[in-house]
Image (cartoon, rainbow, N blue to C red; front, top):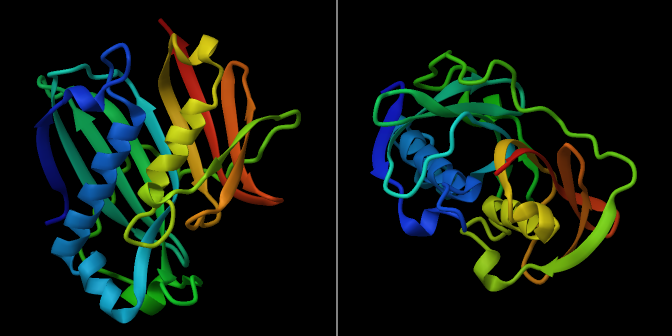
Amino acid sequence: MSTYKESFTVKTYETDHSGKFKPTSWMYHMQEMANIHALSLGFGYDNLIGEGIAWVLSRIHVKFLKLPTWKDKLTIETWHKGSDRLFGFRDYQACDSEDNPIILTTSSWLIINTNTRRVQRMDSVLGSDYAGAYLVNAIDEPAERLVSPQGMELRGSVKANISDIDINQHTNNIRYMEWSMNHISTKLSSKMHVTELWINFNNECRLSDVVDIYVKEADTIFVEGKRGEISVFQARIRYSLE
């Protein structure tokens, strides 16, 4: 199947303090649907892990055209768009109960060797034409490589605990968005809604690693998590105010 769809109703635990669907909730759905669809096409987690390789999310770009609220019914569709030398590309679209697109996403994925943690060439693992590519863009351009601005402020540090670690033995990508939101000033975060976001997942964060969180707040918010001088993740967040 070239695309995969799921329908669901927004749960209370998927919403924020104002009852709006959280960006992290969207990311949970993205993560799970990617594996289910890839598995049906022959290159999901269960297909690859026996060979000592696994997918890891590298970059995302999400547009929230409209934020759903508690009890809203959504249908999410995802599809993979093939690859270049290093990245596999996957897009998503969520529609409301009247079939209006309300969330658009493009994502870029890598395959790593689970022992060496080195990135593998896509064609060396999956060939040059792996199954089911659907060449339609939810967002026209691939998620971009972010560049951190000058003048970022250290807001705090986070230690990767056991509850942060996923099946790939590193901090789950969704935690980075949670850490980002938790280090935006309360004055801003309490009244803002995310309208668009970009995240680069640059280096793994393992159990007990300490990540320093740097933030710059302006019309667009930029967050970077660093382990010493090593960039672990970068996030750029556009928002609207209540």
